[in-house]
Amino acid sequence: MKLANQHIFVTGGSKGIGAAIVRDCLEAGAKVSFVDIDVENGQALVKELKTHGHSVAFAKADVADPAELKKAYESLVAQFGDVTGVVNNAGVNSYADPVEMTDEQWDAFFAIDLKAIWLTARLALPAMRKAHKGAIVNIGSIHGRLTFPNFFPYGAAKSAVLGLTRNLGVDEGHHEIRTNTVAPGYVLTPLTEGWLDAEPGRRDRATSIQPMGRMAQPVEVAKVVTFLLSDDASFVNGSDWAVDGGLSARSA
Ligand SMILES: NC(=O)c1ccc[n+]([C@@H]2O[C@H](COP(=O)([O-])OP(=O)(O)OC[C@H]3O[C@@H](n4cnc5c(N)ncnc54)[C@H](O)[C@@H]3O)[C@@H](O)[C@H]2O)c1
Image (tube, protein in one colour):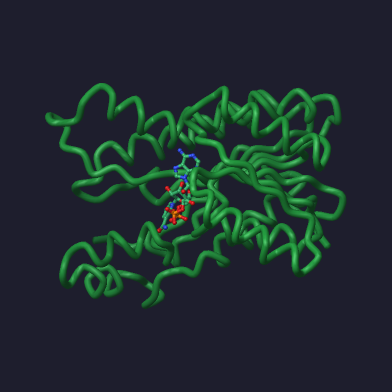
């Protein structure tokens, strides 16, 4: 029970990697709350997990909306007490053309994939500083270090996640608040499945470049997140953990 007596708050927990993180943190003994814009899957997940006796709660919130996020966060703290660990997982892909992309599209994308990490930190840090303990895990991507064509400006956002992780790690470390990035490669989630199916042959090509001959299951990312949230990682701070089956180690 690595996360006993902890309250872990997860963004984008209704499905995909986020749902796997919710499940794994519960199995590790935490109380887990999560927000998402996907209410249907969020409520269904809570219903299922509660039948197993878990302490889990969901609130609808768009992480790009500071007021809605704050309201949801406060309602979840009211249920489970101060948050001891935050997982910033909510994210979307972007396949924009640098010329065609509008200012509004740029701002909307960065609000989710970058700014929301600061927003949740702003909410969680006061109680963590008071407790002199806390952990923040940001879900980055292999795109934080290298990127593929036609993903503009996803690589910019995920690179910035690494910088934000370093800023928080360096500034908050003296409060025993650790911040780290987990950087997945290809994980079989609704987001990836949609992309893999969008073009004939893409799934086979994407599989053929994997050093391990396969893509990850969401739980394989979640296990690393749980470790980083736990005291087993008590001196891990400001770092970037690749969970990509070796893809970022491979030359083209
Ligand atoms: N799947 C992969 O291969 C992969 C690889 C690298 C990084 N990632 C990152 O992992 C994270 C999760 O990805 P996934 O594949 O599980 O995606 P997903 O689309 O399957 O799940 C993401 C969840 O976030 C929620 N969400 C999206 N926008 C939101 C918003 N504005 N407010 C609140 N919730 C919102 C969605 O409703 C969804 O439930 C993302 O940050 C993504 O960039 C995924």
